[in-house]
Each structure stands twice: as C-alpha cells, then as structure tokens.
Length: 224
Image (cartoon, rainbow, N blue to C red; front, side):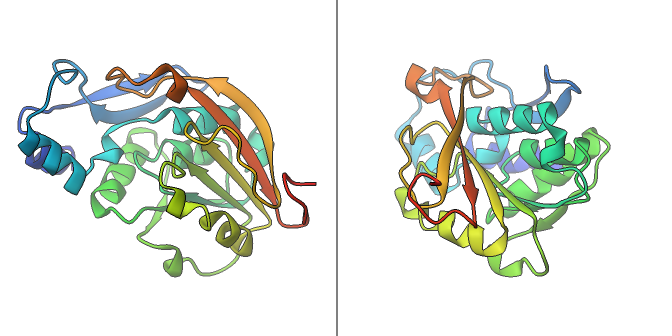
C-alpha cells in the first residue's frame, strides 16, 4: 500500500517521497506524509498544474486536522461509543484520533480515492479500523457526530454545514481559513495555534485554527 501511495504522489511530483511521521499526542499518531525535505522550493508551471489538477491533500496533516485530533484525544467523551463521520478525511488523522478515543464506529469520507487508500494505510499504522466512503450520499444509517477539518478553504463548501446537521445532531469543524464563521447553529468553541505537517512555509495566519461546534437543537446564529 505504501508503494501505491508513493506512485500516486510521484505522478504529481516525481521527486517527492513519503516519510513516516509521529505526532506528539497522547497517544501518538503515526502517519505517512510527504517528506518535506527539498520540497520547500520553487515549482515549475508544469508541477503547479499537476498539483492543481490532483492535489495530494492526503499527504499533509493540516493544522485543522491536527487541532481536531488533539481535541478528541483530550476529550474522548465527545466520541466514546458513537458512530462518527470524518468528512474530507485526507490523511485520516481525525478519524484515527476518534477511533483511539473509543468511537464505536468511524466512517472516513473523501472524494479522492487516493485519500481513502492513505486513510486505510494510516489506520493500519495505528492499529485501528475505519470504514471508508467516497461521498456523503453513501452514508446510510444513524451518525452521532460529524467531524470536518480544513474544508472551508472553498467557500462553496459552506452549505455542507447545514447538510452535516441533517446527518447528525452535532458537528465539530476545525478551520484555519475562516476566523469568524457566522452560520446558524454553529458557535466558536476553541482557538489553537498549530502548523501543517510538513511545514512548507505556510503563512502564520493559517496556523491559527478555529474550532466550531454545530448543534441541531440550536436555531439561532452562532449557536444561540
């Protein structure tokens, strides 16, 4: 599986490599991520076009994902015994943290089939089992909690916040791009500062992560 992931990555960046990274969390989480050495460089137009066409989001542990994973490990009661959906799962760090925190079932959802391969590989590194789905339409049955990190970089994704609350009574969203989310039934819960791994010179402003909680039984703006 690691060989398959490496092949997918090299189709985008021929000189890119994967490396095992251990996140300093209690318990630690191991992920196969882009090896940042020699990647913080100028890219050709051809490389940029390939990255834009096939962004390897799964090869990074984004700041929002790190923040949400840490939150679950610090407060396992949030997921213990629950059916949890990790939407836009990328590397799978959030879903893995949910499983390690005692979630009854974790479903990792991502439209990128390579990301789903990465999730299964990373789950194996951490000794947990995750189900995978390619789209929200494939989610059937009751979901207790939706988790989503780093998906609001595209403002077209904002309506997903309402859809999440149709799937589950509660949602946790972590994002470093939207600092002042003003959306019905969502409220700011926490703010943390973390870096994306590997760190390829990400702007300081994108290291400030906001965690928002959405609740179905709150009907006002900002969760009131």
